[in-house]
Structures are given as structure tokens and as C-alpha cells.
Length: 215
Image (cartoon, rainbow, N blue to C red; front, side, top):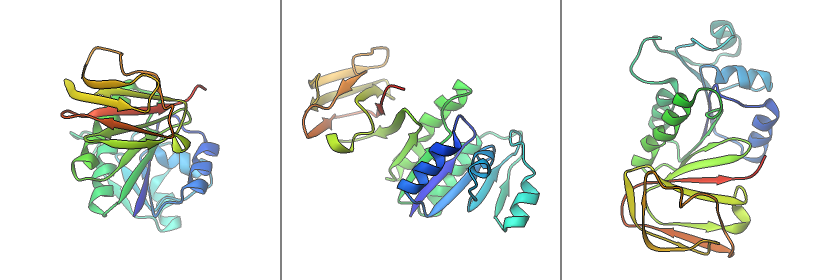
């Protein structure tokens, strides 16, 4: 089951509609102000959740009028609406998760959203954060990348853990062989796929992979 989580960050209605047209989803979850983005795009979620401290809409009226299930959390809680949405997506048996509206705005929320990708990673569910210039995911093992399927021109690798050992990049403009990528270095930023297929291998740690394009 393909699941889309729409959060309350920067998200243009046109991009949201284009994404759903190209990649239809089985379950669409609105996380708090993500509901505003969906309604602005003329779309209806399958589930609304959050503490509703940031949405400008009347959640009760919208949900009852469209018969949309609602999960409400207290404003003072020890988890974010995104964490709640990810846990719901996992519990409902998602086979993959896409997240829109998770970038822009507050940097603390963005960083928490990137770290939140650990939740589906731990249970083997592919998950990615997508905006108009970037696609972000976490890697805990080898990955093959097809040049024709790349999100953008650039591919960057940054260690989420303290360091990643044995990093080997093949098929890239800047290859690596058995390298240790450590936090605090920008060595893995702005690489490019130059062969039809590129491979990423490493022995330990977790990598943040960012595919990006210029705006």
C-alpha cells in the first residue's frame, strides 16, 4: 500500500496535484496544516490527524462533511504530528511512504522530519521526503541507482550516524573506495551519476541520501 503524508511546510498546490497524478496513492494522510494544502489543491485526505494548532481550517466541519476519520492529539505532547503520521502509516501496513510539505519553514521540524525517516527504515519500509528540488531518504545498506530514474542532477551522501565506514561509490563522477564518511565533512555533497547504473555500498552506519536539482 502506497501512503502519502502531507505536512504543513512549504508546498504549492500545483506540485501536490502533479505528484498525485504521476504517483497515485492508496492512503493520503493530512498531518495538521497539511490539511490546508490538500483542501487548497481541491483534494480530500483519507485521514486527518494532529493537534490542530497550526491549521487555519475547521477540522470538525471538513471531516464531518466529507466523512473523513480524524485522530486528535493534545497540543502538549512528546511527539510531533509527523511522528504520529509515520506511526499510523506503519501500523496500516504501508509498503512505501512519501512525505510532502516536510521542508521549508521551521528548521527544527525539518531536522526532526529527516530523523523521523528512521521509523519506517527500522521496519523495512522505504520512505522519502520530497519537495520541488529534493528527494531525501535514509540508507542502511547497499543501493543501486538508475541514472534515468534519478530525481535530479545531484546526489549527496551525508552520515546520519557519527560515521559510516567502508563507503564505496561506483558509477559516480566522484567515486569512493572503502572510505569513512564522518559527520562534519562535506565530502559527500554534490556528486553526480555518470553511468547508467551507480551503486552505493557501506559497511556500517546510516546515510542520508539527497537527490536534488537547481531551482
